Amino acid sequence: MRRARGITSAALVLVAAVACAGPATGEAAASSDEPWPAGPSTASSAAAAAASVALPPTAGVFDYQLGGAYDEVDAGAGSGGPVPVDVVVRDATAAPLPGAYNVCYVNGFQTQPGDAEAWLERAELLLHDADGELVVDPDWPDEYVLDPSTEAQREGILDVLGPAVTGCADAGFDAVEIDNLDTWTRFDEIESAGAYALARAYVETAHDAGLAIAQKNAAEITGVAHGELGFDFAVTEECAAWSECAAYTDVYGDHVLQVEYPDALEEAGLTFDDVCALDDRAPLTVLRDRDLVAAGEDGYVYDAC
Image (cartoon, rainbow, N blue to C red; front, top):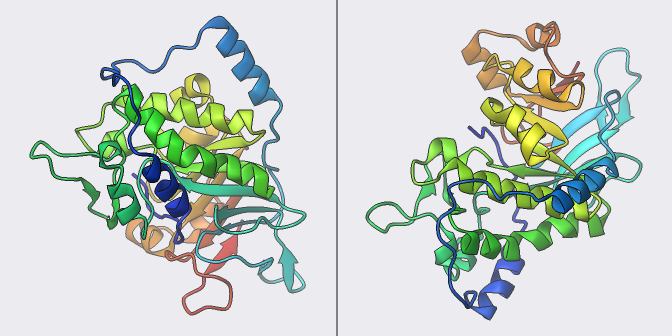
């Protein structure tokens, strides 16, 4: 389950542009019961593309900045004051941080807040329940859930969000984080096959653009996500609070970016010192405030181990 999300919109203009073109023509594909198969040439080219991307460093200063961008963090006592950030995740609408390894956030399986009206122009790409009503995320009621069930729907989603991914590369990001991979675990109307197929398409789009791509959450499918879908590293929220960090580090090794939140740790009966002492935590682990506000704003929290 996703536990946080980017604050700003990454796709509004793109959605509107595609909406003007109207729905795709031609015969719609039938529902997919299996992930898209990769033939020998496709598999070899995908492997070559994956081998050419740069993975994030496993040491240095990491920050998760979806609520506002800034260049330095206070790394705590003994740090000598604010220090530069080496690895950072920012929203797709933000600029990358010069000199750092930059990961670009894209909401790949749900709509972004503020984009609802634009997506309604492509309602065939949105999930509907048995009564034909649009499905929203109950934890984020300003976000519709995308429906990756058919090839036609996946192609439509990629028409909108593919340019957001490639735009990350054009802007100078090194990698992309695709949020809400786990919608198929939260909404019965979505089958894993369609979600996996869309995920693989995002992987191919990222690799073709020269970007590494991160699996976001969904601890239960790390082996599939890395070994079969092609994700290169992981971004995990609250894995310590949910006792699932090993699910990521056993598969991705040190190439895991870990974010914890104070409220979830308190509910789990843990302190951040407890997290830092865990054998299975990621080398780059941070504590952030739930709203991920920028440094200097009310409620800002940052710590690292």
